[in-house]
Image (tube, rainbow, N blue to C red; front, side, top):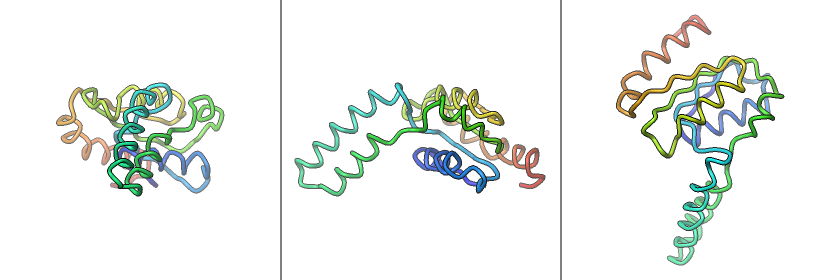
Length: 143
């Protein structure tokens, strides 16, 4: 069972996509922007990387530049992979960095994906522990 928040959620999804037999389940909380939705964010990240380079901070610039080009596997590739592990996805509608639309789209291409979307980040923080415990019980008989 692997999971993560933000870029960690993206990393966990990549791990499951590349090594599906090694992953029993996925917990993806507040997945980053992806696909065509990421284009605007990519531009902002690249501009920030340039500013960091100009400020003589090449290490930070490299990290930000790497984040700019990070993306999820394509939806059609995920669908074709037919990943069979249970997937718990959660996001909030008021989080522009982690759009609920990405979680909703992932739930459609991951056969055992279950998405929960709250209206606010506060609701997400309140709901996440209970929802995760229920999902763990339902799929693994444990908490």
